[in-house]
Length: 313
Image (tube, rainbow, N blue to C red; front, side, top):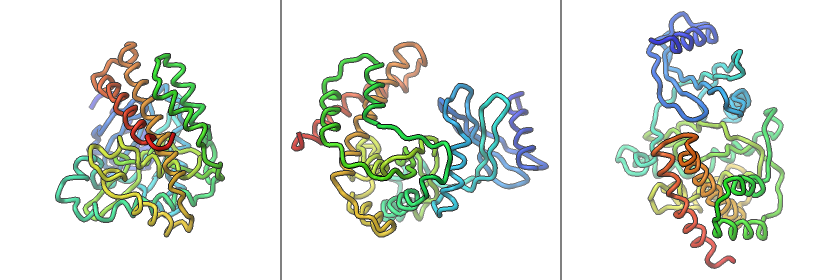
């Protein structure tokens, strides 16, 4: 065990009041955080540790996870969250068994039962999330996504006529504003743990913010999150299944055109994100074959946008 792991083990023992921290192993390491699995006095847990330089406040994310659990959303139990002396934070959650890899969830025989029920479960989960009081958590931000991603596209300094054209469509067809709700912000396959019988937990809440709740439904339907499968909701089911489950659980009628607008903006945003990830590689900021490959998907998103809007200009 190296020095960094020794430090983490000590911090976990102190935070949890545990006598023994064992079986510490790293699961992943994204740009903003590290995820580790371990056992504390024999209990399976997960710790997510924020990287230095990440501007998001993990303490806010932890508060959202706690509030979501109290609201009946299927989330891992939050055991503790602490801010370190360097300003970064970590949070400890119960370990939830299941799968997060989309192609396995969509194709493997062991998830056949789950595939029949999970789209409705997504709708129910979103209804519970959006029913949380908007002031349940301090520190959640709100922003105009059209303005924010226009600024990002301008900063990248690349000509993309399709994205400029779609930006104009988004402005011209912006739906009426609704009272903002807490939204997950990245509700898609990869951020859910799926078991043999369906949804086990919603994870990765770092992008939670205040917005029109239809943002989450539109994002879930973005073509990129279907991972090559035809059904429009995560490659697993139809929009009607999602909408009906959401309406039953929330008592709120869905306006399909509003969800479609959020699906368009989600695809547009993802295209701009892809440009940004390619730029990180090409500029040398973060040399990565993965970032370069994601950058090549910009044209796919531009094609998807033109097909989506073919009859709606």
